[in-house]
Image (cartoon, rainbow, N blue to C red; front, side, top):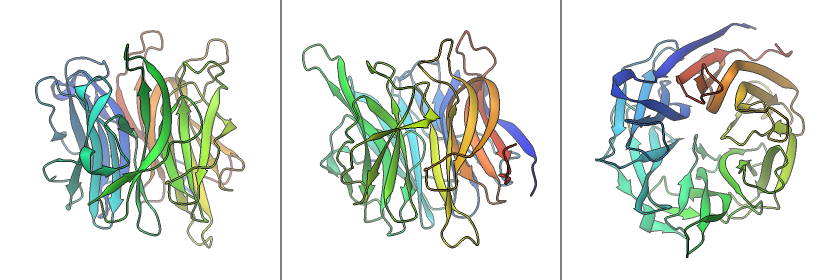
Length: 356
């Protein structure tokens, strides 16, 4: 098997008049085009500063990229944030949010669709008030959503809880948004049991259950230094009690998480996880050492591991490329001390039978 490793800068800070690019989402469109989404933070690196939703497309497995597309522009100080695209047949659906649009912590959920592999997009539809069991504090992803084998669309995310008096965040819980009619209507599932869980990604296991993989906020008083997982047997409507996965280190950060079937293996699949390989409870730990880990047994063990970038590493999103290699879209920086993000890269590499 080919063991090459390549990477390309996709979004570079300062390019196209954008101060900072952040929050990557990577998937393969129905026609095989690679789609790289992110936030284009126009004047600052700060969260919720004026932001457009951006996209670049690749026709050659991530080797080269088309010019920047602004899928949705934020008007004036609007922040269009948290891309979470999902494939549904020949359509690409993009869930994102207009952050803090109607007040602190109160967002508008937006849905855009493309029928031509991301070349053009319909006008955004505000679905906030049409989400059954929903509210305007839900935050999608970031990362990607999935389509289950039964056709259900599942978009992971979380909901914050605030103090009514001073607006302080009291809690956050991971959960999913789902649709059974190709995105025409949506329902918000129940939150997981783990306190101060938030940014999440979801996969469908071989038996049809969902596994939700969540970040634990740094403010957790007893942070375990690892990720929390939860299982749903009803497509994300409810969740069994959350549990910790010590094999997946956590230096509180968003992480990538996907599953794909292994060709010729009769439904046997691989789980792919990506994040900074550090722990909050280790002295000197920081968001560094972007690493991919792989499980061949539905998450029971994580036997394969590859370091992608040694230095500053933050958010990431993996994808199985059309050529059979893995792709990883990830934020990187030159200087760990300044915490500056210099851009978003796409790494491509083969998964071998042994650790590289």
